[in-house]
Image (cartoon, rainbow, N blue to C red; front, top):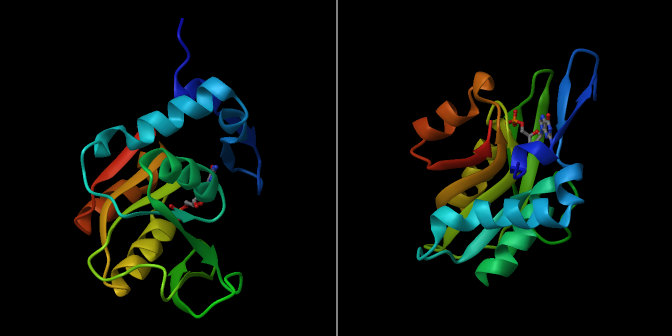
Length: 173
Ligand code: 5GP
């Protein structure tokens, strides 16, 4: 039987904490066929649409977003954890299960009116993606879609992003 993207993803029990089932996409990235399938499927819905930049969320969103940007012949913009980007940045905080996290984007990474595709490996509560969307929008650019390899629907991320008016595309759940 032909393998699907989901077949290349493994589950690691109790990572990073006891009781967590971690969906590990490194096995997808490591397989030539699997990785190409994932990139082709991530960009498929956007064929023929204007996209100026792909933005990737640290860290696995860089691997996927870089390949998607190359295939679409667009630039790539990293959204990073606090303190990692060398130039002037804007920051956005978001809540985690315990505490807060902050992501940043270079303040000159996007121009007003640019159309951006946001890419990450996995959508859980949607907090990380929401913070990324806010950064992109604060620079005056427009998020035309949010593309993920995995959606964990029970955690509500898709609903949260759709309530913000976002189009969510996921390869498996
Ligand atoms: P959220 O902010 O939607 O709750 O969590 C999504 C973020 O956490 C993504 O950046 C994603 O990389 C990471 N993440 C959370 N759980 C998992 C998981 O089980 N597997 C992977 N690969 N990433 C996860």
